Length: 356
Image (cartoon, rainbow, N blue to C red; front, side):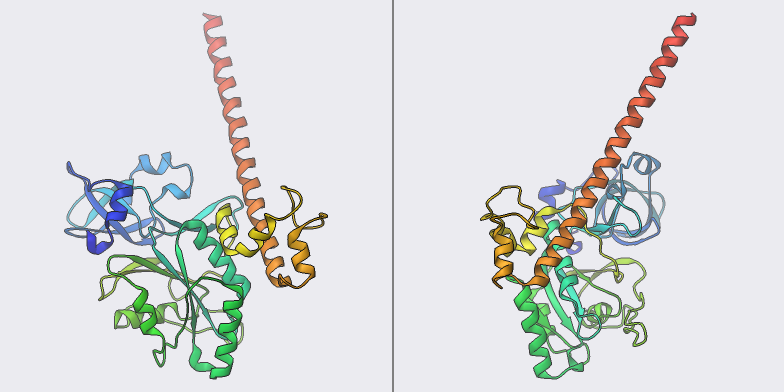
């Protein structure tokens, strides 16, 4: 189990290994609510129990790649997931097209490699979005700039300078999947039995990196289209892979949309400069939009704070506020429906006993 990532850190959170006819397993693949789990004695195809399905309050309660689960064997090749064990990190985003709903990308991740390619995909605002989600999940971020063989040294230095101006205290690695420059820097950060993931848009080279680290073509790869500047979704589902050095990787599909949830701490850590300035504002409830004595606006006016950084911060903050408001609205609606149902049942009971 240790080779699947069941370290002391995980055991502290999830408790000792399960017994009494149950088996401890990790979800290594997910595809349309069908799961592949790996236990000490092998790999099983698995489904969740009806009780787990109907008791789930949201998608957060369903298994995801990276989860540790308690399961029972149905036969030699299949199993039934009875319970999802507690997680130490959840990488999530707002579900595409579903306001106020979360989508779990992967769980129990120690470090996330945020991958961007030079050229069409290079976008510092999107990089800060990924950083915010990682920080909010308690996952250590590392920025990886790929396809550096396509540009000269001067252009590469410019790209790296732009990243480091916007991103503080985060490792930045420049690599080429052709020349393999920079691979040694990635492997130097990867420890045995810890879990890593590569996140980013389609076609930026995530699967190529995994193949390079694994020493073989275990994942399909694709390139960004010159016509649309968008990558094709090579990875169609999430899966966990054990590398030769005993570290674990979760490969994820490319994400063109990365909506924010309500993890406010991630925003503060990504924009720590703005957060520090906010502490100097005259009013505690300053919105940093038009207030007198706003230290953030003052820094913006005198050039200490970049306009693009400020605008991206305000945009992500609005997204988080909207998500939180939507969640609150749904909960309030659920409470009202619950009260209505209870009053109807009480009225029926009262009528029943009154007739008797």
